[in-house]
Image 1 (tube, one colour):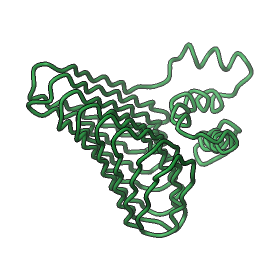
Image 2 (cartoon, rainbow, N blue to C red):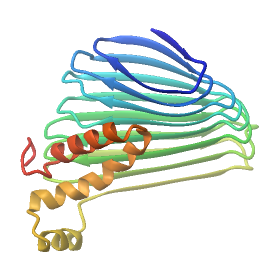
Image 3 (tube, helix red, strand yellow):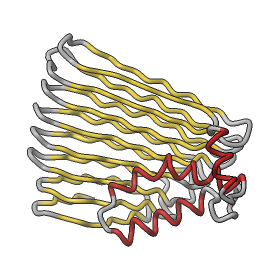
Length: 266
């Protein structure tokens, strides 16, 4: 599949089977890509042309083991926020590489994953700076239940000659339940002096004082943990422009984390 957005856009694309797609964005807009039940593999190439502005969210609804390979090219003064939301009870391998090709290229990559019981989520994300004055940001959030396995390799790579560039990343993992495994590897590969770069990560259980306060307001232990989980995952929904769709996705998120007192991890 090939698609070109030559005008302003606000669209939803559904993937129902394995797909190899190229999408070119030339203007300003919002794109929601839903990976539905029948898909197990997606190879996606995004071309973000000069001066374009976009918000893009990949939303996993696949019931199968899923592999996503996403490559992004960002041209001069293009700005984009790209997210991956995954809350399914299935294993996922997510690979993403963004190439900041020309000066002024600006990208923010976000991921929000719910590690349901006994699932494996493997992630490898890189932002490669290939020009001066380019800007790359990563924000990764995950919530893990019993026996979930989560891995994140987050790589900010600034090549020689890319002066005036910035690479920043944050990964936060909230661990709930027991026997889970979380491994986060933050990398900064810097071959230029005149740059700014940082990384931060946290892996841990919910704050006991927060849980106590929420339970004092009448919430069960499961609902209290669910509410904290939503706080980790919710920011990614800012990439969704349609308010009705955003609200529906929020309700699905609340249900998945057990906020309503049911679900696999309740």
